[in-house]
Image (cartoon, rainbow, N blue to C red; front, side):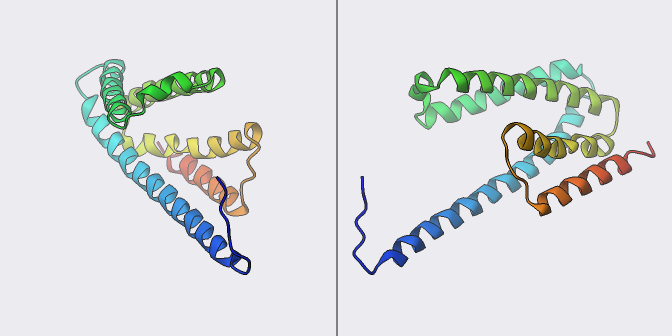
Length: 165
């Protein structure tokens, strides 16, 4: 499909694209903010949930809820038929991502069962620093100076907050 733009009107097309990019960036930041809120709620609810049960069992129960929620979204969003179109390469990386997520949750639940969420959460946030480093090394992303400074501050604050414990 091609879009015909009358001569002398290229600014209108750029303006539409610019608005589209701005909207996409706004939505990206909104989703990231919502993710942070729900991650914080997850930590507090998880701590309350692992008080009287093995942390591995708590992780399995939580994972079952996530499984039901996400497949429900896929099915009701009419995306189930797209499973057959997922490439082998995508499957491999999604499997590795799933294994990493599972191990992360198992270790996180064990940590909050043994200690305070307020001590575990800052260490867990070092994942931000590690993610930036891995994205640079393996995805060849070029972090801005602001991102690098932010990562250094997260690293320093995360390790300093827990140095007295």
